[in-house]
Image (tube, rainbow, N blue to C red; front, side):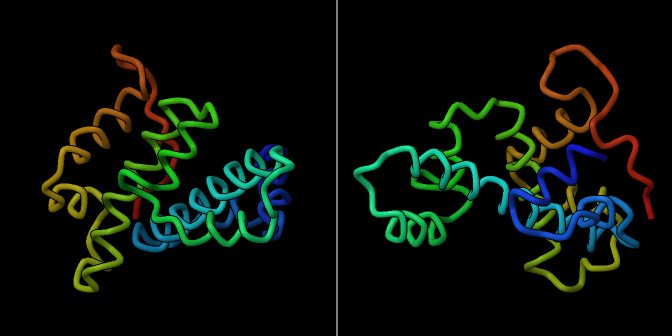
Length: 152
């Protein structure tokens, strides 16, 4: 709980935000909110990394980072990886984007269980999501990072 409060303070959201996201009443709400949280955290990490360079104008840098897409060749994820972000963190962000895009771009999926939205996404990341959800980043099975979340 302390780590979630610390993260919340770093990205300027109320202390109970992460706990409230975890307790979302639907998969739709959970995925959209966790994606927004991960995006805010990723942007913060990249901004802090850029702020270490005293040759950059802080306002221009912040505006630049705020306009970056999350995925793609010139994306926030690529800059996040350049800051030393681990593969597991990048994979988590990318995996959340798959159902997020399903939920966000097709309102008819709003009432579907998370697993159905993931299955409907025909991408390589679909496999990565399942691999991450089941095994984490390791090759051998371990407790799923998503197994503690109560499903609706």
